[in-house]
Amino acid sequence: MEIIPYLALFCRSFQEYANIELIDKEVDSEIYDIRNSIKIYGNRFGKSKEQFLKADEKQDDEFKDKLRFDFAKKLNIHYNLGIFFTKDKKIIGNTQLISNALNLNGLSDKEKSTKSYDLGYQLAKIINSISEGIANSIPVPYITLRENVPTIYYDDFNTNKNNFFNAVIGKDINLFMLHILSNINFVKYVLESLFIDENLWMFRIKYITVYHAYLGLKKLKAHIENNRIELAYLDNSITPILKNGEILFASRFRNCMMHYNMENNGIFSVSEENFNEEKMFFGLVEDCFNGESYKQYLDKINCFGQQMEDLLTQQFNIESAHLKTF
Image 1 (cartoon, rainbow, N blue to C red):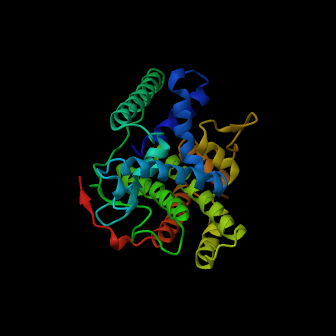
Image 2 (cartoon, helix red, strand yellow):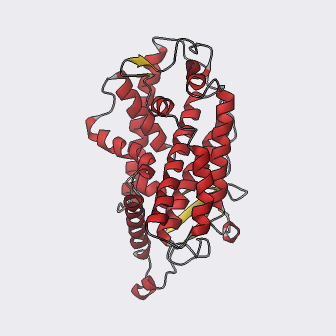
């Protein structure tokens, strides 16, 4: 379920690049919204917070309604959040993030199942059409896949009362940080485990996820400072990470990662001096980052993502999770 926003991003981006209509009109707005769920951290903190708390409220109501006795609804004995982990307790996703990204809140179990299947079918149909179209025009490169799908574990929590969240921080910030961490780690520990470093789609997804996590931390820092929240330790921890990120996200390079077009206002994004068909992205990395190679830049992105992961993981009581298998 967590890969669907990235598939939606691919389908929308290719449609825009090729300037052809691939997505059925009845699902186009749905796929557009799912694609934009990746970019939610670019909003001001208040807007993201409102959306996450609304999703939390809907999940809370849904699971309260499953209780047999009404008096039990006020006791917070139900679970409204499932968190997914790797075997060594790396957070790789959560149910509220998925429900919010795919617009599943408020639907019955049967409606969720039907909608999820339909989304997967529509995206697969588009991707298959693109793949066949490309194969009819140019040789399709062989994609190396590793058989490293991790075993997924989970634990269930109540967001109103649990030992897993940071008690010093409000539920809104806990959820905000949990969702950012879920995005980073899903890409790192699930998707990335399947692909080799030279897979450029994987690099794009990693770059986009890390970039929006960076935006999320910027919004969180501004929220803490603007509202004078007594979280100096968190503010001080975020500051050096943001400083490290400032040099990683050059706008010219970012535009090419977000979209498939490698030109801006009719000008090709790679200079003649650095253009090389044998290089990753034809030399775009070298052109945007003072001659740095793709491998050097990838290492910096990985290091930066690790810094954010470490900071966010430290905000939760990971050891309190009791892992279960499906």
